Image 1 (spheres, rainbow, N blue to C red):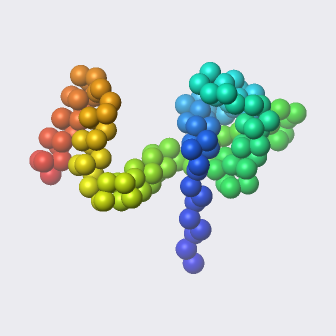
Image 2 (tube, rainbow, N blue to C red):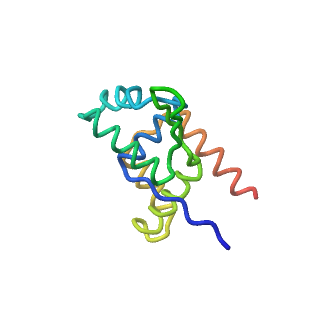
Length: 127
């Protein structure tokens, strides 16, 4: 018997997961205050999204105190890996090189980022 595939987060759910990955355990209020800095988000919308995420198994909710505490249940690296693979397949016709060139063409990479990319490419070519 195989395990059921983990649900894939929506764009809004990914924003919440990113906060939980960065900050760790948070209340809805804490998540909402961070979201509010970058977008017009209502508290009840954030609450509803986090309730849905709990139902989908994306987050756990500790209800032992009056203020519920949420934490991410999905692994950040696995989620990112799945989304990148899906993007490579669906948007770049299976070409990781085309995706990387598009990304580097659209966004200015810092010297440190370019050095890290070069190092990674060197390691790949030496395998």
